[in-house]
Image (cartoon, rainbow, N blue to C red; front, side, top):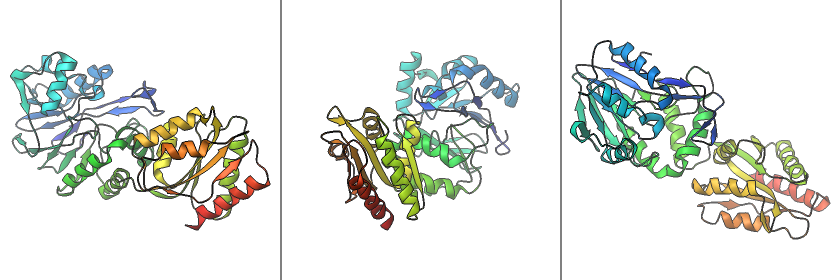
Amino acid sequence: MKITNDIRYIGVNDHELDLFEGQYIVPNGMAYNSYVIVDEKVAVMDTVDANFADAWLDNLRAVLGDKQPDYLIVSHMEPDHSANIARFAELYPAAVIVSSAVAFRMMSNYFGTDFAARRLVVGEGDALSLGTHELAFYTAPMVHWPEVIVTYDRTDKVLFSADAFGKFGALDVEEDWACEARRYYIGIVGKFGAQTQALLKKAAVLDIQTICPLHGPVLTENLEYYIRLYDLWSSYQPETEGVMIAYTSVYGNTKKAALQLAAALRAKGCPKVAVNDLARGDMAEAVEDAFRYSKLVLATTTYNGDVFPFMREFLHHLTERNFQNRTVAFIENGSWTPTAAKVMKGMLEGCKNLTYAQTDVKILAALNADSAAQLDALAEELCAD
């Protein structure tokens, strides 16, 4: 793939992977992106997953022919990008490895060497000339590991953004960017919104025409759209005005209440309503929806004096990722002493800028006239804002 006259894509598609990072379902696989800049000096931008070393090296040779690379720039040490550093170093003994000081310490852990004799440590504002192309390096710690750097090609105005602006899915599959990029961001980077905001501020002063991430497609058009979404996600602002209902149900009564509330919201004109069964759906999709919508309804049973396990896991995912700036409502069910709402509110105590609905729905085993009226009142309240 030709990105500019001098920049080529040499990454690979992975359709063998079922769970990214051991937990995220990737029905359309993953792309492990790598690039090469061919100038007076040749710079390779990152490697790929260990399972695709041969394909990646074949792609590199197809671009370079007999030409030898001068640099390997390592932006991120997660193994899906860094696994082939040692092999590259063996094949190209004259090449210099360029990365952050923290990354070289990590290389010692992964490979038993920090390549001291052939390394170039770069940090904030450092530059590297390839001839025509001038590269500038910017640190991006905790987006989403501490060693991360991004590289800006001042000549072609290309930002090599590491894991920022990445998404799930291989490049040979057509799918909506925002859906899988949102799930990727919230799941993997979401805890580090402040650090992502810091990176966006650095990027704002650059004339960026192309973004080359380590996962997902190269972005060349309407960059304002992608940057705006990243700004929303990393500042924890709702992307969509609407209600997400997350529920767990043992015998179907809490599910009935959740679906009845969804129907009432739609009947009252609520623009967007999403419903997630936490026990059966993709947990990452549910977490994504909680961060996407402006209002969240938590519906669950009291279980062993606590909340149902899938709801506890869901709330842990939210609090771990700094859930904030939302309206939250509760539906609790209990056959004798409902305590779920109290437990859930306690789990959210550390979250910033949450507004709680005035209407709490309490179900004693099954819906009755009183709890049905509470559901209708909650729908009215959520639609009124």
